[in-house]
Length: 402
Image (cartoon, rainbow, N blue to C red; front, side, top):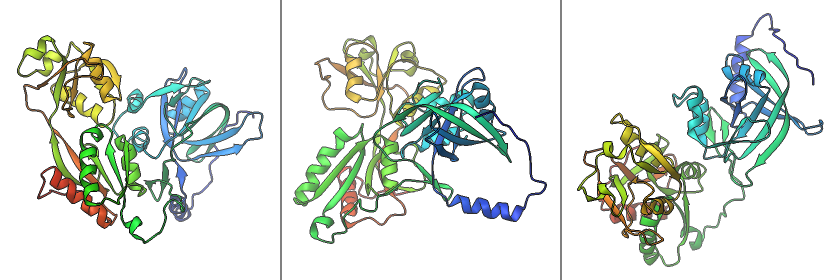
């Protein structure tokens, strides 16, 4: 293709027709994509819904994206000559919001919301996107308020699992397979329940809850889903889950939540560390030490906010998504950590001793909550599970809010 640009504009715009067009297109479901680029014009990214296949039968497959002409990303893509289309998973709405400007992040800070890699062109790729198309610009054309940018696909990443994040009716959604659930009205169907739990909490609360529930209902068909918080919220949205145990951080009005237990952060240290001898630890004393950070949302931002709220910045030495790996790192004297979930055992998997100490100042605590989709009527078994959780955590008079 030859590079073609046009600034031709219609002489007059039919505003009524334009309004009906925008309304009509708002009902057309599409995947949510983040277009990124890097090169001489710098590293940029923007959320777009207008991404379509053009042809698989060109020498290399061709697709197009539409980017608003006022966006700095449009100019950067054309100057850099490369871009990557990151098709987001159903649990990655936070990435879309970030690159759509809803989070308040600007410029390079937008890229802090997730992990990145590159493929052939050097354009940034979301490490765990659903699909990614790595492209070189072959042509562009200005049409109305947007640049239509054609890309020759150089490389493709396919995760091999997961579902796409969908945008329609001016809101996010998720696909649902029609054959996904049986419609049986028998006793077996009534005794089926899927429960989600934020993966950090699951080992501490799920076994005891399940043991009590199965004693009451020996024939229950109980499915457990342990995952990160964004994945669980997406599963609630598409009704794969009825109930989930989550952090109270970053939840919105679409969820109804019941507080179950307050979580007080503490400092985790290796046995023999000088600070382990103190009755309580100051955040200021931790700053020079390497922090082993639990790199999962919303835990990561919460723990870092404890420092930020006091005008401090920790020295991050290690990042891991595994609680037990993190405890092992601390046990070997490679750093300290701040956590809210506390195992009964003070030993690591490989036999190293750990010491937990409180902070010496009051900080904002987080909360373990039971979350359900506010718009969904819960099954009798889900309601019983919710009551069971309130009893288990001693919340006889729960304070539900949305």
